[in-house]
Length: 379
Ligand SMILES: [Fe+2]
Image (cartoon, rainbow, N blue to C red; front, side):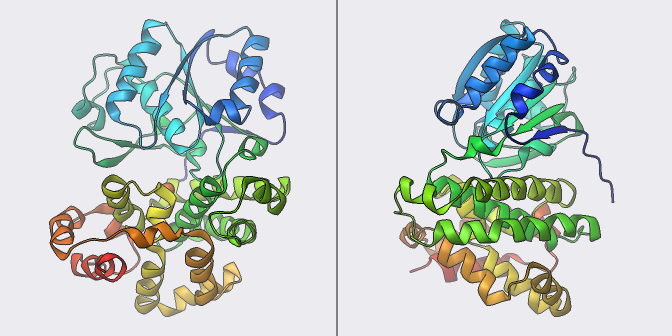
């Protein structure tokens, strides 16, 4: 196994202000890449602005990141960063903003690059250095070499490259306190998906399994608390349900999940989930996790001893773990998604010879995926 994780991660309260010099080490001008809302509402943008000022780093702001960021928007942001002579990129936000920032770093160094050459990694110049500040507990993108973007055909694809590692990342879990319940659960169940899919990846080993198990053990309690009232729980109630230490546990779990998938990759739930996101707009975490019970069933059939060890390690049996995912974390809105058999047939070819499907520690055929989609969504 090849564990290469070169990102310096500062975590804990006030880690940004305490390590403002880490920005200066990357250059004297940066472009901040973020969305419209979370970076501001969480206080992360203000914290970064103060740190940049203290470090004597000039900045420009591109706040056009949307969910499932399109490659074209990253190219536009890259041109903006290049025009402003940015020497490095600072991504602030959840997975979308952090993944976009990695791509912006590529385009800023290669302003004329087209989408095909971007995905082919035919980059004349190395990406600009990257600093990341997380505001959700889900993606783990802070510590991975992965960026998931939406191409011009409206398909989600991941790109992996050692050059996409952040030079430095900041994880102050207080920046996740403003997350709504829906965001908390969607991102939190993404953590469970990362950790679980990594555990049942064909590439898993003792090191990656340690990341996975700890991630699940940290995240399970807070998610059960957050999900107990259902998705209509008011924000004030969520704040009462989740203490700062619960939020910190979720955030640390997200980093562990990122470390796990960074080496093993994900399995079929993530890839089939991309289809749900592209077609029905289902948030990424929910879209992946809805397929976890089917994966757990499939891997248990294939290797019951391996599955039994997983449940022993996480301290929950299969029923309890499946219930945590489906009864506490997934929204009832998923019940409104309805597919026809023809729709499913039309989608199936995308999973033939798919790397994430093959990475699952059980043989999963397109017939299996047809069965899973049918049982969940043909009504
Ligand atoms: Fe994910």
